[in-house]
Image (cartoon, rainbow, N blue to C red; front, side, top):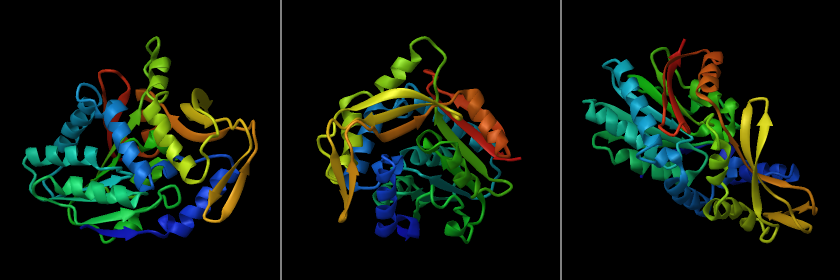
Length: 317
């Protein structure tokens, strides 16, 4: 069992306060869809069946291509892979396997996520790669603690490869800060993002990845846990932000409903939407520009065959 450091930002009191504040703003922030055991289990099932990132003929190719670029850019020092907001660690496990196949022998890994159950699952996935030391982990809310460097001190010997897979799409551009906070001069950052291809019909194809029963079931998990069972169907639409387009999921209560969080009741009047999902989309150009504006040198951007998944390899300028 890994030794998991639990940050104050994910204590029950902190999560309770965060959820109440979000509900008062008529939102369920994305982070809350990954925290509970049932929600994280449903997400893992959904990602495997619906995400292009898990498609061996599509998104997986972009991750494998980025891994090859990263391996070529590394020196001979030991490698420490840090998966920031790693989910179940499947992508990090594949990266570690590529490093192992390339002849790397001194490998270690640290899973970092808001969900303790996902940190445990990721540590198990990473340790399944022969020769990988995945004995520690960190449970932390990176939206509350963007500087992760104190949580991973002291630094292990060698080069860090920090992954930020899918987080730009889930939490937006500000989440990049958490990954950058762990970079030293020779370290690498691998960042993935959901892309919006410029081909006809691409917006409809992207919406279809959300507009389906498994996604609704996953997003409804938190609503059910706080007593909102019959608020109405979750609908999805495009919304333009200063950071680019994103898919928004909302529930429009047909009648007034009350959310209950550990003794606190938050009233939800009818006719006002409750936002339960925000998913940002990028282009290869906006992804690269975002990294450069953050002071990183982009070594390569891998694009999946469908054009819906991009993985960038970067280091400090």
